[in-house]
Amino acid sequence: SQQGEEDPQALSIQEGENATMNCSYKTSINNLQWYRQNSGRGLVHLILIRSNEREKHSGRLRVTLDTSKKSSSLLITASRAADTASYFCATADTGFQKLVFGTGTRLLVSP
Amino acid sequence: ETGVTQTPRHLVMGMTNKKSLKCEQHLGHNAMYWYKQSAKKPLELMFVYSLEERVENNSVPSRFSPECPNSSHLFLHLHTLQPEDSALYLCASSQSWTGGGTGELFFGEGSRLTVL
Image 1 (cartoon, rainbow over the protein chains, first blue to last red):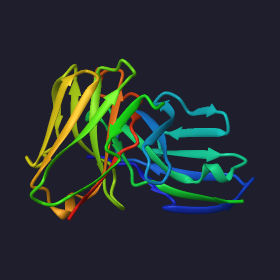
Image 2 (tube, rainbow over the protein chains, first blue to last red):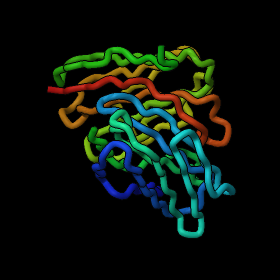
Image 3 (tube, one colour):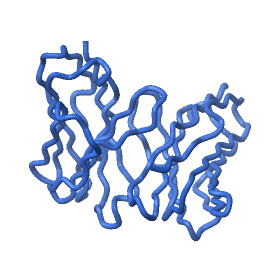
Image 4 (cartoon, one colour):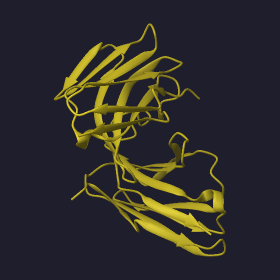
């Protein structure tokens, strides 16, 4: 089955900087979703972008989707220490019809 | 209060024990899921229930036995587990299974299981 693969695996930045994470996938999708997970906790849905959308915003989050390159990026602007978490992309394959998660990007934001 | 509640948050059990994980959702959703999260591996979908009927079983060993008595409650019964079953078990719900469960998922905080 297809799987979103996040890049980088780990990212360390200072407060106030922007953080960019990328997700690549293999087949056609209905939508792509980003989730956040604080250490040892459950996942929290951040944003969903449909295959016919190219960009979406939510607060300090900006998600782009390039279906020709089968890739998506999540940008967190003006990061805060509280943004420290793992971020996962999940793809909804048109054929498979289930969400498939990647292995995540661990983001560390230092004060 | 989170919309999806899991208990217990931590569980340590021996390989011969029988225990259960419980999940309750307060969101009025019709679909519920069990996921397994192991270190450095993608989230693995285990089971899906839609309107109390199991619609997905991703080749999970029989030592894991799910139960969905109603649309708000989901259990995962555990027996004769192996040390490699140690992981974080996450319950999730979604509004419906229509379209194969590709909508937004709402997760609980997880049950951290350690098998000795």
